[in-house]
Length: 190
Length: 196
Image 1 (spheres, each protein chain N blue to C red):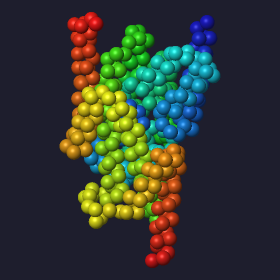
Image 2: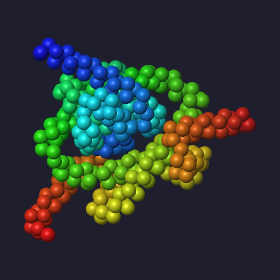
Image 3: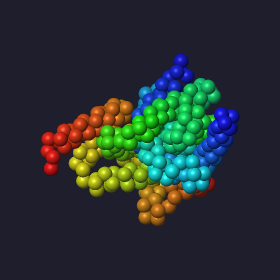
Image 4: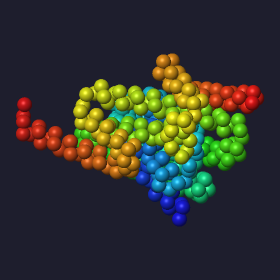
């Protein structure tokens, strides 16, 4: 039953991604690429890219994207429902408790312990994305097989983000355009 | 009187739906941006929620698992109109990305097979890698500068677990929740034993 599987996978993503933003990324990779093989690494990277360019949380975008590819619109609905169900229930319970007791020490302490782990997990997922970009999807990291064009592009983007404080969306668009131009000109010369 | 209440509730739900839909469709840049805009709309413009209370709802949205934008919508919707409000707000927040990504995924294969687009996407992957690297750098620096050795230890251990040993992220999250609970109780005990 792919629909139930989609629901259950995205239920877990919704339940375990603490911290917002990129926090869901490692979980999505874990479920969608590693555990179920619904997307290859390139498709997953495209998904992250598309999520950056469109409004909406990455978890919802992924649920729709994966769901529709695996089981059509009903798959997308099941995955999206799975994704929002845990947070909906938990937020309502927390809001009730909070309005009643106005005390969240335990919650704060749990979050304090989760935050560093979330950073580490995003880093780990980021490394696998970068490795796939620089060395291809198989993930064998060998200096001789480095895609130097991508490595230089990565360096340029980091500089634009850190030194020039450029908007991330523009950095990505620029990287895409530069790559397209270089390959197109390269093709012309050859 | 009851008739009037129901009518007012209908108006609130409709306004909630339209505002949440609008915010979700036009907000780029993640959950924190959308939560700020929600505060502007519901607290400053409509005066449906007090400033203080809104901040508390945002805190709840950020501490619960899941997307911050969805959580913020649930918290605001629930506060305004109970369970019906929460469901209305979720639907309104989810519809725009659902429609946009559905359209993109239908075109994706045709799109991907175009040479120019796949060059563009390949280049953008380097950009995404850089964006993630920058985000991780900022977050990790914050934690290292906090000089809390438990936090730094959790970060290092989680990185090894995820990246080197390939331990599933859900397991790491559960262990950290357990650590958080343990820390709360240890702190409490220390406080009761040592009154200074």
